Length: 166
Image 1 (tube, rainbow, N blue to C red):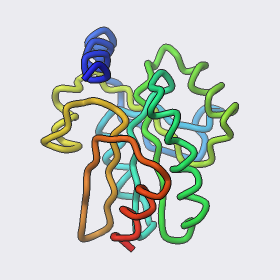
Image 2: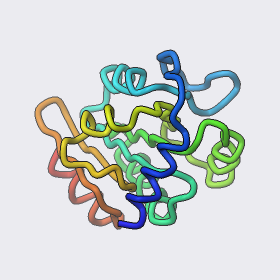
Image 3: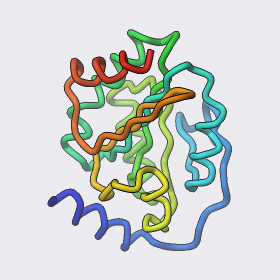
């Protein structure tokens, strides 16, 4: 519950003019991630070709998120032909250097996307109608199925859920 209040407080503080949609490349402006609004995020997900896609919403200031990130990285490596892992950062756009340093320090290999869209009241229900906005949160989907989880995972729990989609 504490995370939920913190997230909404931080979202309100970061509200501003909506950014232009950015397509996601491997590297944008020399960075290992792209900054997108929600439309850019949705467009990217339609381009992912892996049979199963795992999207994790996280932030560098979220301790449970940081704890589970290695599990997503391990999943991506262990199932690289069948699973695409997308790490959607909800860090503040004015703290890009912090995110860059975090990615480098933790040697993240999964696709990282910085979601810069201050209209959380509009896009959170589009991710999942029941999502409170708290993180970590994860979506696992393939062409025919979709599951949403507002929780932290162990590697075993994450792998078990992904296997139901393979």
